Image (cartoon, rainbow, N blue to C red):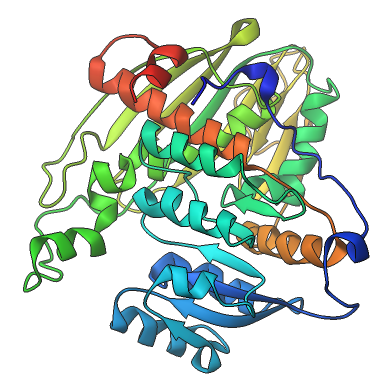
Length: 395
């Protein structure tokens, strides 16, 4: 697999073709979908999909019977859906038009590859993979895709009305020249004091599969599995250009009772082309405190984005303005609130786009955002600057 080049980035604008040319759906029909992986995320996103008027749940799949049973109970209509224990069998079902991949992160490349071969529309949860080799495998499968299909990943900020408005302000030059972007991923519950002993009676490998998020090899670790959302936003606002290098630091504030995470706090500085820096600040175990947002500092203003609002700060020519110190003064701000579930906005776009005959493919940007997170993880682990090319040569 060749190193990804910036000039080869696929832009996010959808290719529009006639629905009658590209798809067999009739007007007012519904897209039948299946779910591969009915754990917590599969149940959450699957419920949003099942409640979509453009969609119908047709099949569910999980290797564990209790997860199947939970899905049948919690996802509307899943009790009437076909059930499979093997993803290949679900993908072979001709009644399934589209598939949600919500399996553990390290399985995403394998299941994406199989869904491409089965010529399904794909909604794959983020990130694209847990390591460089997995991302390369996914890209190799993508090269064989049916270009009439819709492929989305769970980087749902790209479908939020407020994020899209802020992105328009950014690209139109509303805040001037931007040289600094920041992503804050600060959230968590109480620090762990002991292992809950979940699945303690099961064999170790099954325990690890069921608790995959606690293991770096299976999840990519917190920076890849969690912080990738903010990283994707920085890449997106940088016009879908990935960074060329990264430096970072991190560590554990509290001992691990389970798993092998290397950090529960870390900061990474990414160097993008054109002298732009992207800072990631991430802290876990914050006793319920949450600050998840992005900021973009320009020569004419500052944009702030989050899942609940977007905010534009204007000029502050006089420090006597209250907003110099008291951000409760909104006289120099434009703020737009959001009550929408941004994952719901993304799944709605998925099914509406399929029915409208609008192929859309975010594979390249999703993989690059995943690799950007992996680049940051490598910089933290090595405690030195790591380049994009070095990372790509590592597998």
